[in-house]
Image 1 (tube, rainbow, N blue to C red):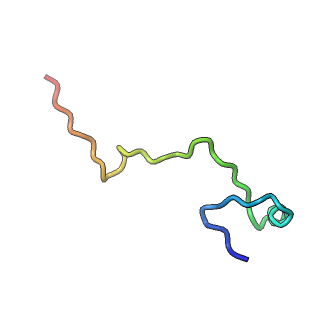
Image 2: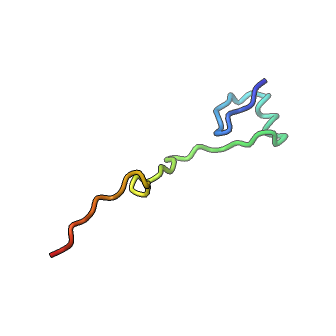
Image 3: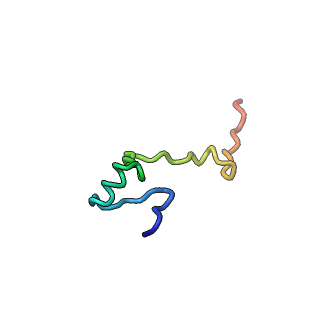
Length: 55
């Protein structure tokens, strides 16, 4: 016996896991099509390049 990873993990669809799901000991999470990635421009470590003033 061991704990599942806090970020979740794939497990086989066996009677053990189906029973745990039925008893609400675990919850099923559907995978997202495209996980939201943080935008690099919003990160303080990557500042946007300075723009030259318009003439």
